Picture 1 (cartoon, rainbow, N blue to C red):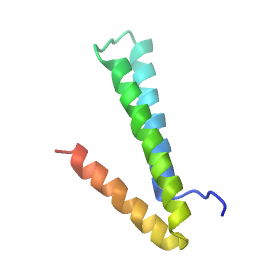
Picture 2 (tube, rainbow, N blue to C red):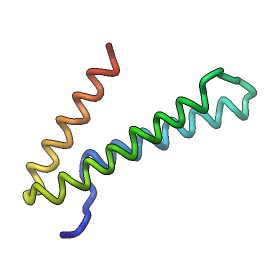
Picture 3 (cartoon, rainbow, N blue to C red):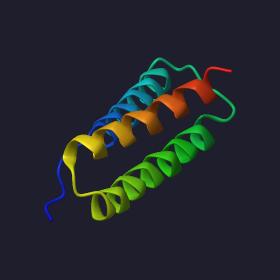
Length: 84
């Protein structure tokens, strides 16, 4: 099976790009946060686990539409838990 782009892949990459941009933009503008590097490390862990979850979901679920629905559900649950 080919590893194809899904909703979960794309959202994980967007999170990584956005957080990296935000962190390095603040670093260039001389805004220092006490736990900025730790936040980037945690973002990396979340991104890696999201990509790993997507890889295993693509191995288990063969239908592309169902795979995207499950990925969308994972992304929505993550968003709802982070907005608390």
